[in-house]
Image 1: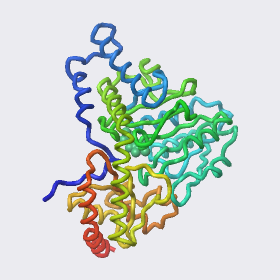
Image 2: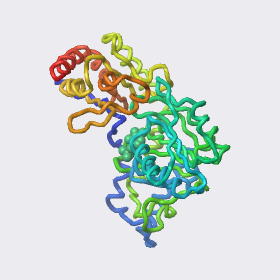
Image 3: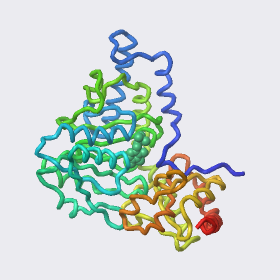
Length: 386
Ligand SMILES: *Cc1c(COP(=O)(O)O)cnc(C)c1O
């Protein structure tokens, strides 16, 4: 059996060796609490401050604008509920899109339970927010916009600089979930008027449970947690120093390598996409034609279903994902594909292949070679259950 192929980098990535090595001392001799005033504490504080500074540099932010979190989900919750609860109460609406990550969707729904009016900016059939339709939702009554930079299921890039510029004259707080964008496309908050931006460590070679949020100076924000005064009270609790150090190292490496690595992955993704379409001509690639990040390919093959195809792929040693939630064996068709107007039938056949550090030329060639037989198998499986 050949080595298994991991094509699920949008779900998580392995911790990079350099990151692991940077973190290791903080599980050993450098174990101090950054709030302690003795030498152990001062050493931990210095490491934490340095990590914050390095992440700020990667984003074009000021050091005091970086707040560490337990990952993307917590950062999204803080980015939405924080400004919502601190808003000028004359502002009653939140603008978002139907293709956000669950962490954003559920946080906006929580704000709605607290009285917010949800305004949903529509997306085109290729999965990009319609700028004019978005602009029509703007007004002085809007507290917050939350729009992701790169979609985690189909990889489409949203025109965040343009959307943020449109929202700015209204004094609206603008959040973007950049978990799938950071390290993949250029990001600089010094020339993009976003107020809050989410990143997650485990999508870029840092550990699960690491993450950060950029909070522009002056952004009104109520913290979600209550406790000590760590991270300016925005995120109380003893800091995860090792995770912060690991995230900083991973972020720097991702920025350093971005252009070369994304050129590599983009070429591999395009080759994979072309090869799959050549072998299975009725396959439909979602988000095709829109600007897409290099690392994500999402496609449906009529007559299959995600579950059968993922099982066939897994048995052949290829790990992919459906990109949508699997509940008790039933794959619920993706809310993202539904928003694009993809039929329920086609959406329930979607498979996401996401490329990254583990993806090689040979792995792409092999998946392309295996694909037609796996499709035939998935079609038999799908036929057998329906
Ligand atoms: C993975 C992901 C998240 C959640 O991040 P966690 O660190 O896993 O909580 C949020 N948004 C997007 C777009 C993601 O891909």
